[in-house]
Image (cartoon, rainbow, N blue to C red; front, side):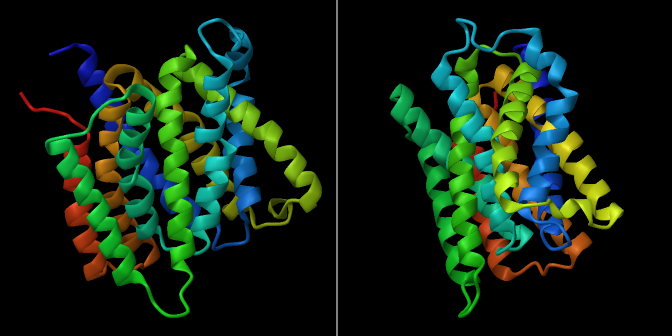
Length: 291
């Protein structure tokens, strides 16, 4: 076995844990005294400050970092992605975030690889993608209720997953280390966020209870914004985008269980059915072969 594979698989597992924790914290955050922009400020502002040395340690405009790849890096893993997730969390439960956000990542990654590299999807990978699509479709239909707005959150999660797939593919072409990539994404996301805060007025976090702010500062800024991007980038570096997306297989389960335990969300039959299709689908779609 390639000596880099254990490092990559460990990073992918850590990314799954971080991703699930971030989903739970995000859902909880938008149900308290904070709004999406407040949480986004903590999510990107804190890592931008922590990672400043990496941002200026190497010019990101070097020949190894094509400008278009850097733009896609920020769009896919930065502020647009974060705002879509946080806005969706206002409408849909955390279990929906786990299924639609993490579950659809391999689907969009495969589509992106097909468009960008002409990679064909066939055999077990195709079966896996079909399982993912079927699981999400059944979950969406079973979860629909008259007057419910969770479908709006589901659509936003799908859009966010599409952007994250772009980030996964773009990172392989940016020529930056995981730490430099995280610094670049968070730094530019913070700069993009400042004009939005100017127009929306005083952030609510200035008058919010300190426990709410502290939880989001640590969970969003340190764990997700700093460690999360770096860990996932390490997984991509050692496994490639397709194999790194395998980490998404654990996220729907972890998020659903975490939401039930910490936030009292019910584990419905529709959620169990979706997980039974989506999780194996992610594994098959990743293209990983056990030898």
